[in-house]
Image 1 (tube, one colour):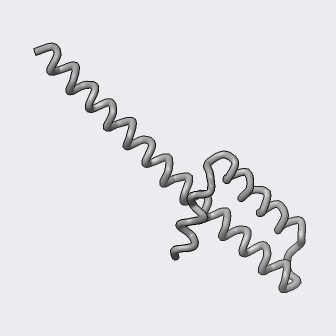
Image 2 (cartoon, one colour):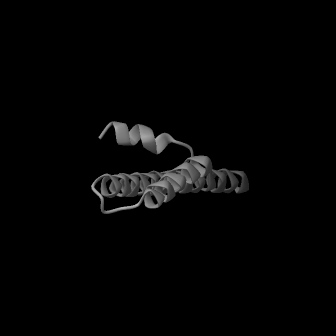
Length: 81
């Protein structure tokens, strides 16, 4: 009986770990998409005379840092929408 409970506990733990990883991935995806939106907004404002090149560079640096930390999978998702 103890073995059965241990296996059930291990299976539950694996499921929780997978769920947390998926949640982390979704949150990183959303954060990356938000950074891209901010980059686009900064670039648009710069081109239309209402923003600075520094704002655009800061937004680009934020996207680059996000890619370094989380990878660039969110870019693939953005291309599909």
